[in-house]
Amino acid sequence: MTTPVGAGLDTTRTGTALTVSRLTAGHGLLTAVHPVDLHVAPGEVLALVGANGAGKTTLLRTIAGIHPARDGSVRLGDTDVTPLSAHRRARLGLALVPEGRRLFPELTVAENLAVAASSGRRGRWDVATVVAAFPQLRDLLSRPANRLSGGQQQAVAIGRALMTNPSVLMLDEVSLGLSPAAVDLVYASLTTLRTSGVTVVLVEQDLARALEFADRVVCMLEGRLVLEGTSGDLTRDQVTAAYFGLAGTRSIPAAGPPQEQP
Ligand code: ATP
Image 1 (cartoon, protein in one colour):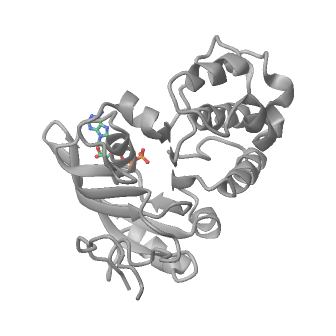
Image 2 (image 1 turned 30 degrees about the vertical axis):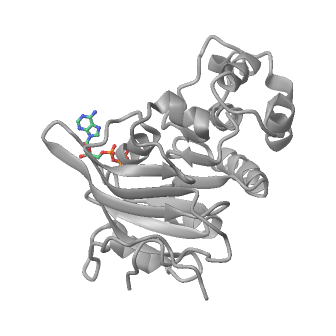
Image 3 (image 1 turned 60 degrees about the vertical axis):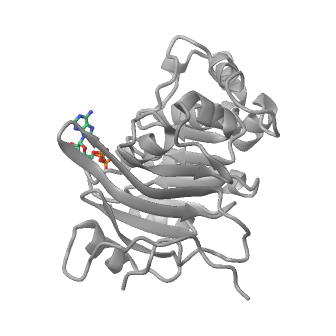
């Protein structure tokens, strides 16, 4: 069973935090993202899953403006950010925690956080609130990033993105390379921050974790979204079948934004 992207949206939430329309991107001759349509509601947590090479990273980087779009548009709330640079999108509230975390290795945790604050918006997130959400960072603020464990680095990377006070936070491969205990810690903090109202789009390889944590799951296969549903409606078998492109999976037709309920 597949449904149009956006159809599973919780219509009690008003408006759309992120609207991706017919977004297309590639690398040289390769089209890595075929026209993709995606709507994410304010405060929603959306998991993007798919096999290696499905196009998840290219999609997130194109939404963030780091990778050029070949076609299509990206709206952040009511603002069309398609013509804007990644830096200007960040200033408007669109943040990406990249795969591999990309911290400044010689800078301390506090310095990594401070650098981000200057490129974002003002809001509830500062060093104190980031440390409250990620208590494991409390005693590490003066430690260089290259002397942290993988889980600690991921916490700093997410904290750094939060320092820009995003309305939409995108996280690429949030648990990649972390121990199970470190993944648990990161997700405990993500659970805390979802109560802050930030909209989250996360790439997660662990399907069970994605279904457990997200409100909605979309699956990408060879550059296309092939399955979408609320976590409560989708089974792990359905997601696994879509993930591997097994029979019954088909491309999702383009959908408009969700309609208001009468
Ligand atoms: P992974 O989980 O392995 O990161 P992904 O779903 O994020 O995979 P992408 O990294 O977006 O997928 O890759 C999509 C396609 O684009 C793949 O075929 C990949 O080989 C190709 N690709 C990605 N980056 C580049 C690049 N810099 N140059 C050329 N091709 C690339």
